[in-house]
Image (cartoon, rainbow, N blue to C red):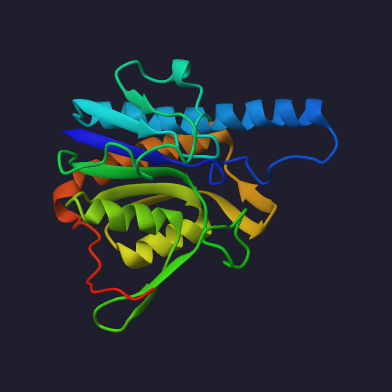
Length: 223
């Protein structure tokens, strides 16, 4: 089994904002702290994937500079895709038909979602049936993976993005690691419990991967 883990940071337990104006030392320490929280959640997903029988696990470090994960702390069996954001040939480098499942960790809701933490990014299209479909980064990941025949089987993030994914892919397993109360406010699980929940969710998703269809949108599309 070959697994692709797509990551972001705004959806990890403990994250509520980017930084503080005018305090570079505090911002540096805050960034390092958030990167460690992200790394621990990703590691929980990586280890759960190998425990579920994965032979290959690729982690896409996709937040910001695409260099946020403290990769020396990850399970050494995985591989990390990282580098300068915007310089890759595609948004999901190396994702192809050879993968058996996709997982999304640290996800946030789309722009404009009420009571969600750091909501941003928003794509919308009209499908071949005339249905208007809004997409977050998580559901866009699922849609692009779907063009390769790869199902997204597990997603973690705040309760708003996990609700979106549960609606669009009902059998996708979700881990809501925090309840959003606003753009910079949340009620989070303690990080250790969040990692446990993510591991459980990934294990369940991979166990059900043959029951979870790829998220395939019907064209032709209109933007």
